[in-house]
Image (cartoon, rainbow, N blue to C red):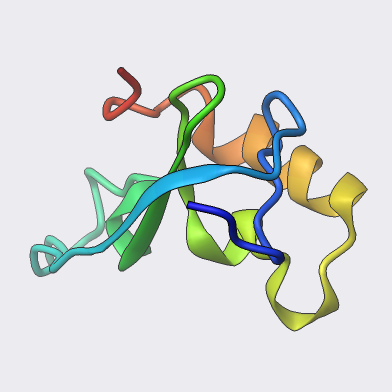
Length: 85
């Protein structure tokens, strides 16, 4: 699926294979099991490398730069990406 806004922070591809919206569980009272993915409601899969990426990063929401997106991806989401194929 060609999406002119999509850019994979992992491999740089501009091709997404699908996008999904998800619901999230309520946080625990003290956020003891806080995971950065807990607040992600929209995800997109890169058709090139198979990474599942939060849409706000992949589509560079709020004028996010490619560099900032890659930094946030690597710092917060890549290591805890339990959805990667």
